[in-house]
Amino acid sequence: MTKLLPSWVESANSATTDFPLNNLPYGVFGTDPGALHCGVAIGDMILDLTQMEVDNKLDLPKASVFSNGSWNSFMALGAGVWEEFRAMLTEALAAGSARQDELTAYLVPMASVTMAMPFDVAEYTDFYAGRNHAFNVGTMFRGAENALPPNWLHIPIGYNGRASSVVVSGTDVRRPWGQLKGPDMEAPIFAPSRRFDLELEMGAIVGQPSNGPVSVQQADDMIFGYVLLNDWSARDIQAWEYQPLGPFQAKATATTISPWIVTKAALEPFRTSTPEREKELLPYLQEPGPMLYDIALEVGLAPEGTAETVIARTNYNEMYYSAAQQLAHHTTSGCPMRVGDLLGSGTISGPEKENRGSLLELSWGGKEPLTLDSGEERSFLEDGDTLTLRGAAHGNGYRIGFGPCTGTLLAAADQQ
Image (cartoon, rainbow, N blue to C red; front, side, top):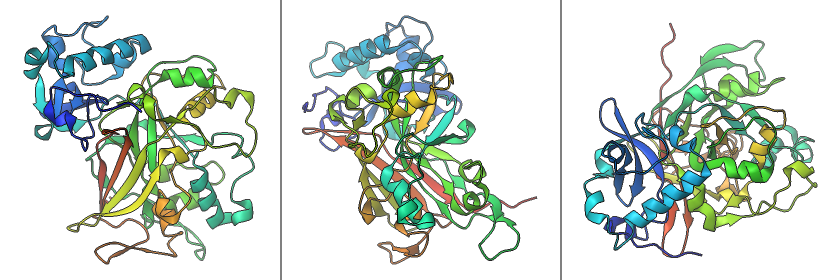
């Protein structure tokens, strides 16, 4: 395991910062309305790459890469440029760098800015690839003996979501309306969701396009980086609408992502393997090496005006299918992938109750409400609740963090 890389930015040398020199995640920030800049996080500062580009301080093969407040143009330059650029930043921000005086002028305090969407989401696909989550949900609705559908151990199940509803951390989420039908009701009603939930996930960002099937290794090579992802879900709307075609409006309210893209290169020391297969996968899904990452995850829930309670802790290494497998499977039909495509991992749950990544599981469908530190109970989310997802890979004296992935649930809007 690599050690902490020292930086001349002192705040980056703390063992508790999410953003040491080992990390260097990419984001988009604003200091004035309408002015968005691309930057890299280092300690409690942001290196303003957009301004550096304006001042001809960057050497890139294309002009105006960072001019539009998005990382899509940079991603499109390819893996060779990604590697060279990261090496340049690491050298420039390292302790003893000859560029310290030059780059100090481009550092912006993180506390003084507002974070924005780090990339333009081309398409969004959400998977159902965590075995513990799938087994828990299946057990609730079909019993343990039929918990996993017959295809689950053979194929990464997913659905096409709404790119337009992906929002950055800090964006409020409004409780959705929809058709609800309880088991004792003759007909559905139109009302605000009563069983609104979170889903603790990771998001993989596609940085290179494809036009035809790719292998798992090629898929891994296409991935630019990862974010935390909360796929907000209206369980009662979903229960009525999902047969026969699957999730639709229940998953279209919002998907919140963390503001920093942690690159695949930063996570390289934390690679780990997917679990032993219960059924042998078809050759096109078999992995040439470790494709998961050891990333500790947690969920905090804070009712309005009340301190946060950590309600779940788990790890990304619990996934049954890796993002590379999901991406490779996505391309098998010939479906083209584009720069900026986002893949949600599916809810990440571990084997124990405290490892469950959704309230649906934590409260077992509402039958076992959680008691928060404040004494309040939760089966599903209440108006005013703030959810915060956190994640970090832990190295020797440092951590590779993602920053918080936060959203507050607002009351349903009045219907006209």
